[in-house]
Amino acid sequence: MQKAVGVIGVTGFVGKYLAATLAKKGYQVVGFSRQGKANVRGVSEWRKTEEMSLHGLHAIINLAGERVDQRWTTENKQKFESSRIGMTKKIAQQLEAMPSETRPQVWINASAVGFYGDGKELLLDETSPSGEGYLAQLCIDWEKAVTPVSGVRSVIVRIGMVLGRGGMAWDRMKKIFALGLGGKLGSGQQWMPWIHVQDLADGIVFSLENEHVVGVVNGVSPAPERNIALTKKLATALHRPAIFGAPGWALRLAFGDFGDFLLGGQRVYPRAWEKAGFVFTYPTLELALVELRQ
Ligand SMILES: NC(=O)c1ccc[n+]([C@@H]2O[C@H](COP(=O)([O-])OP(=O)(O)OC[C@H]3O[C@@H](n4cnc5c(N)ncnc54)[C@H](OP(=O)(O)O)[C@@H]3O)[C@@H](O)[C@H]2O)c1
Image (cartoon, rainbow, N blue to C red; front, side, top):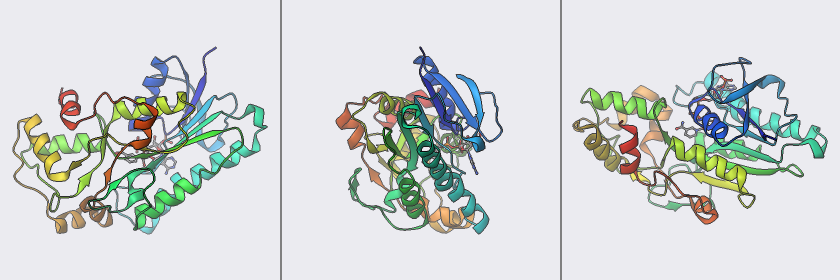
C-alpha cells in the first residue's frame, strides 16, 4: 500500500518540487493549503490547513511560512510568526491529541539558516549556537515549537537560499543579470548558503526514509559561496556582466530590515546529511548553474 505523506505549504516553491519528488517515489501526497485545494502536480488529496487533520498519514512535512523578504512591519511580523511558530505549535497539539498508534511516524519541519544570525567567517554546522537578530529569534522559536511527541521522529531542516526555476531567488537574480544590472550585495564578502531545490526535495525525502536522521539538519549544499563569488559565477553562467552591485544603504532602502539580513551571512555546512550518507546531485554552484540556466 502507498504511504501517505502530508505536505503543508505544498502550493509554495519548495512544496511543488517536493510533491513531484514524493509522487515519483511512489508516495501518496496529501496537500494542505489554506485554500483547501490547488493545482499541484503529484498531489492526489487535499485538506484544509486550518482543519489540520493528520489522520492516515505516515508522515507530515511542514513548509508553511509567510515570505520574509517583505517589509518587517508589525503586521507582517505577526504573519511571519503565526505562519511558522503558530502553525508548528498547531501540528504538535494535533499530534499529541491523536492516539499514539495512529500518529504519523515522521514529522519534518522547515526552519532556516537565519537561525545562525550573521555568522561572519565561522564554519557553522548543526551543533553551532544560534545567532542574534529578529530572524534568528524567529527561527529559534519556530524550532522550539517542534516539541517531542511520543512515537514520532522529528527532523528540522534549516534551509538556506533555495535556487530553482520558479523560486524567488533564482528568478529575481536571473532577471537582474539579464538586464545587465547584476552585482554583489554590499561588500560581497558575506557567505551565502544555498541549495538547489531538487537537492532540498531529495534531502527531505532522504530524511523521511532514513530512521537515523533525527533532529536538526542543515538544508544547504556543501559548498557555500561568498556573495561576490556567487555573483561572478552567475554572471559567467548567464554571459552577462556583474559590474553594478547594490550598496548596503540601497538594500536597506529597498528591503528595510531584510536588507540588513542580506548584508550578513552564514557559512553553513550540511554535516548531518553528510554523516547520514545523503548524496547531493548539485554539490557545487557550477553544477547547479548548468541545470538552472537551461
Ligand atoms: N525559498 C527559500 O529560499 C527558503 C530559504 C529558507 C527557508 N525557507 C523556508 O522554507 C519554507 C518553504 O519555502 P518556499 O520558498 O517554498 O515558500 P513559499 O513559496 O512562499 O510557500 C510557502 C507556503 O506557506 C504557506 N503560507 C504562506 N503564508 C502563510 C500564512 N500566512 N499562513 C499559513 N500558511 C502560509 C502557503 O500555503 P497556502 O497558501 O497554500 O496555504 C505557501 O504554499 C518556508 O517556511 C520558508 O520560510 C525557504
